[in-house]
Length: 153
Ligand code: HEC
Image (cartoon, rainbow, N blue to C red; front, side, top):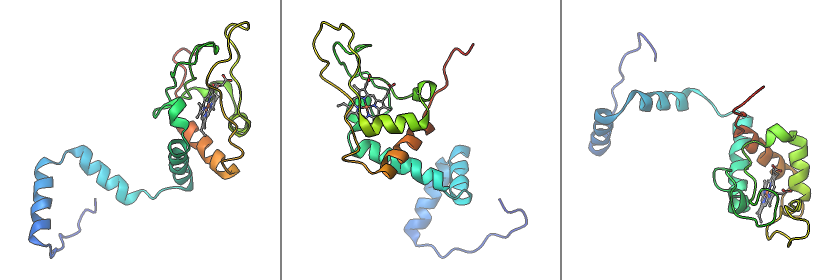
């Protein structure tokens, strides 16, 4: 990392020295890359917001309906599509502000069959539970996870 620098002497405890040796015998170039990237790359305010959004997404139970990987798929009979939607493609359909409004106000899913029963799951309104800052950080987290459409025209 620092060409021309000399190896400093470290006064390590024997156990720490053994642990370090054990690590070095198994470490891969990827491990080295990871260590270097943690050391030299400070977290940006955006990284911090995304991490906080991810925590809120789990803590407030979004994962219960939308999944830990935002994959959706929980059965929701008579909702259009028949299941809770994945959140991996919301940026194809909404702006960030629209998603923030949707999370704030909630939404009942449109029915597959209008004569059929009300779907058991709906999107709750979060404005009574989450601050605007929480919701905005969740939106940042969702945006960090968006997958591009496979087919683009
Ligand atoms: C009780 C289940 C449930 C929970 C908990 C829940 N959602 Fe939802 N969510 C839904 C359902 C059902 C829909 C589909 C609504 C519709 O089709 O109009 C939805 C829709 C959405 C959408 C729009 C997706 C789209 O493609 O239209 C977003 C964004 C979203 N939820 C985010 C969240 C966030 C963020 C949280 C946590 C703060 C959360 N949801 C918690 C059930 C839930």
